[in-house]
Structures are given as structure tokens and as C-alpha cells.
Length: 216
Image (tube, rainbow, N blue to C red; front, side, top):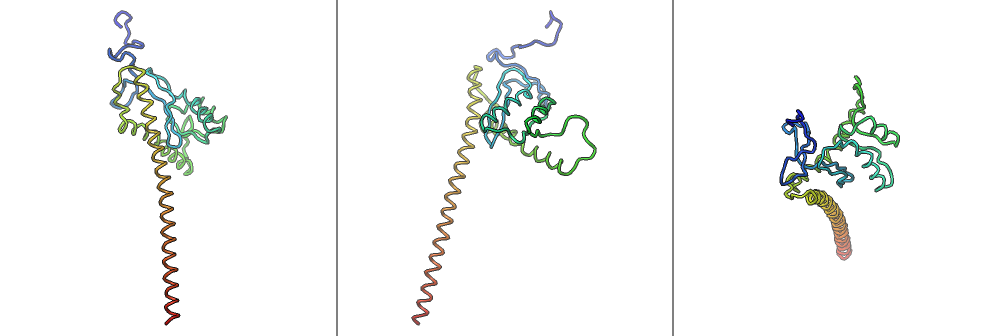
């Protein structure tokens, strides 16, 4: 830096024990620079897919096309809408989604209109609520599954640990869905049996009442 008279060094080492870590400028309040891996993640039907993992900084908006194509390969069709962060709403991504009949969330580019209809406002609110699912998955991974406290040292083992974290999240989601399905069958069967038993009791009481009345 002294010889070149610059304040920047590309691919500089910030940790001797982990030389693969690079500083990533995020610009967040209180955390202008972060150290670690950067992830690009998508969420579909409460399941999380780790699409891109890198120790270097990258623009995640370039992953949108590949993520949508992966969705089509998995399901056989394009999604009706994609709910993305502001950085994904580039002109190129909007045009690409429009060609394939995909609605991308967020306001259009350019100057915002003066008069916005109630339907548009409600659609924007619904899109933001829907997009909160991916933010919740990140919070769940950090709080419950220690995604923000990776103790491994090598880059390969750290990447494996991160991938296993999202695998465990998906397994937890699957287990919860299977449990809810089992309980729904169990409760419906119990409810049906209870109704059937009560009907039998009522029939028995009614028959007994008529018999007693006839005998008397």
C-alpha cells in the first residue's frame, strides 16, 4: 500500500488461521464490513436451497436467472412470481422475467408514480410479507443452528458445515409437515370414532327408551 500509494489491496489476508476469508463491504448500520462467506439462498414451499456460496464478494442479482431455471428444472414450469430483495430488481432481470411471464416483486424502476391504487399497495404489502420467509430462514439458521458461529477452520469444512445447516433446516421442516399430517389423520380418525360412538350410544338409548315405553 505504501509503495503503490493506495488504500486498497485485492484478496488481502485478514486472518492467518483462515487465509480464505476476505472482507466484504456491506454498508449496513453498525456493520459496514463483514468477514465470512456470502450466501445466495432461495426458498420454495418452506424449503431452503443454497444456490451460491463464496468467500469473495459478489453481486447476488446475477444469480436470479440461474435460480429461476433451477426452479423450472425441479418443478417443470416457471413460477408465477418471484419475491426478491431490491438488489435483484435490475433492468435486465425485470426484462428476463417479463419475457417468461414471471411477475417480479417490488415497484418498477424510475420515478415512482404520484397516484398508487389500493390494489397495487396491497400487492406490494403482500409481496413483502411473503418475502419475509427467507429472512426468517436466515434468522432461524443463525439463532437455532449456529450459522453465525461456524467453528471450523478450513474453507471446505466450513462450506460443508453451512450446507449441513440448511439441510437440517429442511429436515426439520419435513419432520414438522409429516408430524402435522400424522396428527391430522389421527385427530380425524379420533373425531370420527367419537361421533360414531356417540351415535351408537344415542341409538341404544333411543331404542331402550322405546322398548321401555312399549313394555310399560
